[in-house]
Length: 259
Ligand SMILES: Cc1cc2nc3c(=O)[nH]c(=O)nc-3n(C[C@H](O)[C@H](O)[C@H](O)COP(=O)(O)O)c2cc1C
Ligand code: SF4
Ligand code: SF4
Image 1 (spheres, rainbow, N blue to C red):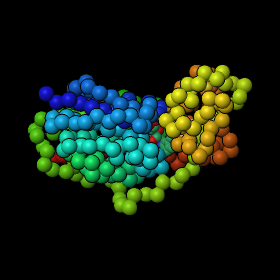
Image 2: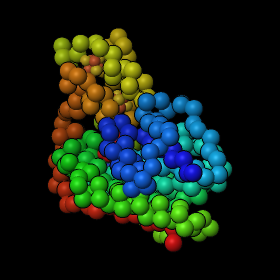
Image 3: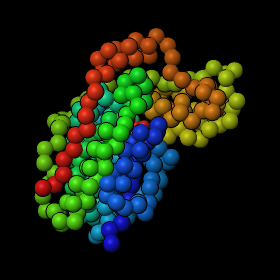
Image 4: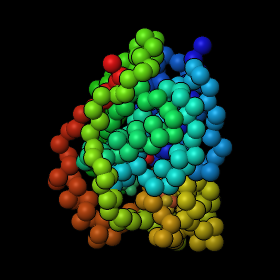
């Protein structure tokens, strides 16, 4: 009996939703779910022969986030099957899926399926609005079912066909758009301090963000019950307008499964 593990980094919930739909397609409830956004230093599971691991990562700057790649580099695949997924905000996934697949292969996983799916952009929510939608959900479930067929047929000797991307991987532009709050809007509940994956918010002044640590993941915005934390400023407005103008045309999911 196969066991499914899920490991993902989901700061604002989209990656998690997509991973869950693929598991629905696989028709199996995961025996363990790890959201690395809760703890990047969490103890990672050890895998055995029949296990299947679904790994979902959001695309940041056309790559997988550095902090996530660091954590995933501690995985030991022991030859088990992995399903690699990247979720992106309707701009592009560039080299992220290739990077994730390469990393997993390097860590001794057998990647049986790899896919890039679309979620609402977590920095610029006017891009990829309401994705994943019903049509995305159907694709995610179909991808899960195709992976299940590959597993059932024992297609374990071949590699996944073509994955978009090239090496050296794209240089990821490091523009930090750090959300902040107004002091008077913050009730000092500490939720953002506890949940920031990289410890960029201090308990003494939670309305400030340490821009040397922040990865712009948006988690603090999503969880603040006072809606105090947000993106603002001229740089954010300008880049937001450019993104809406350039990247609103709908993109569709792409995936590939071992033959
Ligand atoms: C720092 C950062 C960089 C991003 N870079 C890209 C990108 O290069 N291409 C893209 O289409 N979306 C990009 N996005 C959007 C996310 O990939 C997308 O919103 C994803 O669904 C977020 O996943 P989550 O909801 O699980 O956190 C970026 C988001 C962040 C926070
Ligand atoms: S979650 Fe919101 S209200 Fe709570 S400490 Fe953070 S900014 Fe303040
Ligand atoms: S401060 Fe930055 S890294 Fe921390 S949760 Fe907010 S957006 Fe994410």
